Image 1: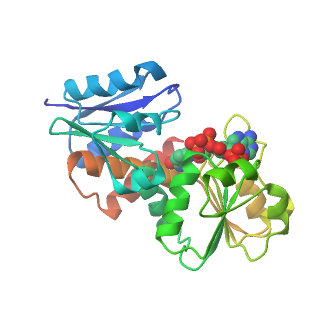
Image 2: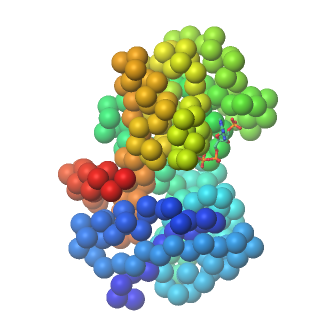
Image 3: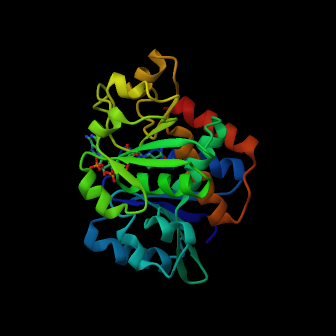
Length: 271
Ligand code: NAP
């Protein structure tokens, strides 16, 4: 196929920025590719993966709510995706569908870019969904001292995340020696921009706040943090990072730090 076929598999995708991000990356790589939006129903997920493989697609991203379900349709699952239990990138290669988790890499790229240290630091991970799983795995792999998951229902989340400390938001209020909070909840995302997962007092426990949300660019949580002189970062670099890593897998290329910066600047100006 001359123009590689790529896309995004999910349920409701009308607000996705992925087609624009990937078109910027294709331009950078000087490659021609068509990145489509594929909205599929749950019952059609397996046939959709098989169909894309049969049509000679090069790769797709997978998003909510299929990052877990899609795993049963794959021929290979990378180590990081298996450990996280979720796939957000499929590479169709040599007649096989291979699954990866590039959210994991995008998250690490974001922390590196904004100089948020992991090694020896204590983290509160807010939320217990798919994104939190990639975040926890990355924090574990890169030497976090303490990872404390914060859930509205700590008992239920604790039954799933048995290897880490799981507390609720009341317990967080009494927690000590925290460094960084990572918001892995949708709380504060457009259109609920006045919401924050943390109250003013809890925010002040941290010296850094990372919000995986990128719409709006400055969330209520970030505003609360900055009002107290606390460093605050949004999730746009992670979004760009996961797309870059997916392209590196699909096209077997290495995208330089300078090019990632340039892609990020262009995406940032679009939001
Ligand atoms: P998800 O699977 O729906 O999980 C979100 C978790 O947040 C839930 O498990 C829940 O945990 C908690 N939560 C849900 N609604 C809440 C509310 N109203 N108040 C407080 N907590 C709430 O979502 P996800 O896929 O993990 O994504 C989470 C966020 O990360 C979304 O905003 C998504 O857009 C963002 N994200 C960004 C990137 C990026 O590239 N920047 C990548 C992936 C995800 P408890 O029930 O345990 O409290």
